[in-house]
Amino acid sequence: MHATLAELYETSGVRFDDVCRVFDDELLSDLPFVNTLCEHVGRYRGKMLRPALVLLAGRACGELTRQHRVIAAVVEMVHMATLVHDDVLDEADVRRGLVALNRLQGNEAAVLFGDFLISHAFHLCSSIDSQYASRLIGSTTNTVCEGELMQIYHRGDLDLTEDEYMQIISRKTASLTSTCCVLGARYAGADPATIGRLEAYGLNLGIAFQIADDLLDLLGDEQEAGKTLGLDLKKRKLTLPLIHLLGRADADQRAAARRLLNLAEPDCLRRVRQLVAQAGSDEYSRGVARRHVEAALAAVSDLPPSAARDSLCALARFTVDRRQ
Image (spheres, rainbow, N blue to C red):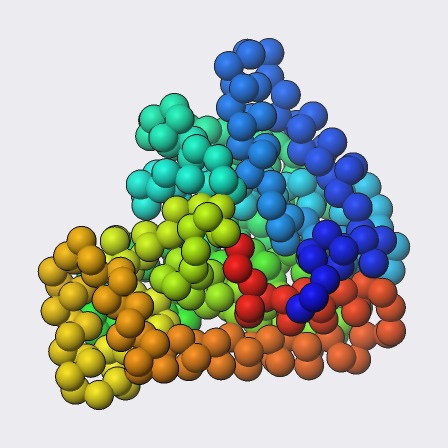
């Protein structure tokens, strides 16, 4: 993928100025220290993937309305809340090249600020006349929490299966990307069949995105990624390359990996990276991600030709080989 995400969005005419304005206006407080926290977390805006999916799905199906801008701001608030809470759970130091909020203000402030974002997300969503968006986003946040709980429940489980891993990432990541596409299409007046195609696109995109993110956490460069890496290994969360390594590598590689994961030695990350490369577990994982990208592309192939559809396709292709 040669184009940047910003170029991809610009090609389809998607702009985030109004979405960011709605986002910032909703969070404005009469307490200066709360506004300081909002400004800090506001700088976490990076790929803007979820708002983009709302807007691109809407454009691919019809015209954008005020409801799309509100929903786009809402899903970004929900996503930001999960980032803030994740950094507490993972004891992260860096987010988007900045000091993570939990390091800046402590875990108590970070947890409460994540709750603040979720509360404002539903307050903002209630400004839409129809309750469909509120109910779907509420259901989705429940699913996201279930996925996170499932991952914590299986922490340190060296026998985690690929199917169980797929359940986890489908719930904690892909459910929200799928919902973004559904809402974008529905509020543009799409018919049920078209909404279903975009739902499938969002689900497969989210799965591919999370596999790529897990690969990045294990194999990426921290400076380039702009966030703390190696946290899954540190917290003994099994991701797809490790599941493949433990289940399908040769006996010596599997035994070495189990020893490393059980001991959590200081040099564990470097040595696990070597084993993952030797066993081809990284390429296996990229192959699974690419199959989900292909499924996402197939889901939107019957949409009418448009710049928005082209951007949805380009966005799916961008997912696998990104470095941030």
